[in-house]
Image (cartoon, rainbow, N blue to C red; front, side, top):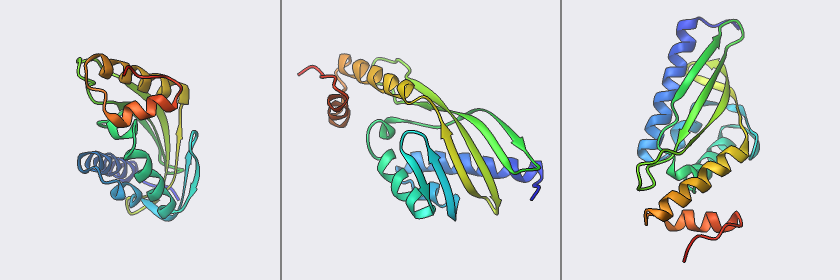
Length: 167
């Protein structure tokens, strides 16, 4: 079904506002509620999720653990709209909080959204290089460690990657 550019633009703005609110509250239920009950979510590092509740379980677990829990916002660097097909394609930045030394650590992904109407999405796919995110999170840990701010969850995560934080 073709959608108007105005509707797709507003639906994507609603998506972005909802994500910002989820970050602010530390509660990702609102993100899952952006999807239809039978939505598909394709996440290249974590797999495929079928249905809103599977998306809710995954996003809550992922964003409450390091490194997701240290990401401060998810702004779109750019986006394009395909009105005839109902697609919004964008590059999302994933900056992490200041590790304590003022440095910036971020990695980007391409997000592909398929609109279903009424501010709901029937599909999301996040495409990225997981190695870029791994390197970014490790650099963040090293900067936080040097600044004396490495939190325990990040220390444990870093140990699981095979790196050993300083004692």
